[in-house]
Length: 141
Image 1 (tube, rainbow, N blue to C red):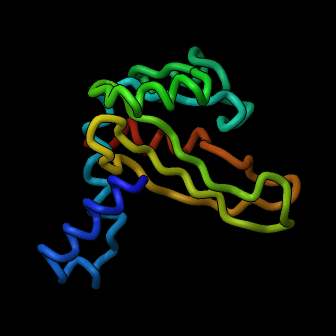
Image 2 (spheres, one colour):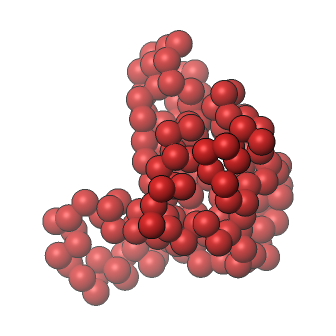
């Protein structure tokens, strides 16, 4: 995240007009490149209706691997060029209504490949990546 933030600050310095734009649209342009990478996911951060590789493949036909947090840490340490991972920030049951942010980052370059969020309410919307996220990533060209 620190490497991404450093790159982001430099991007803003190089092109100050980007501050006025929706910066996430800029970063989501990288989503098309995610298809050449292996997406590392932690099982408890994936909605129950798509929590297997087989279920995900039906809507996102690219490389996905369920891993431990330690395996993600290892890929980051090794700066693995083939790996992107989900960084999820959500309420984890602590609030009645809160946002869940889903960010996919490259382990080699710290590029942001995908960003989205949704509202999590008690009994509605899982606190993690949803099937709609996989659909959005799959259709990006």
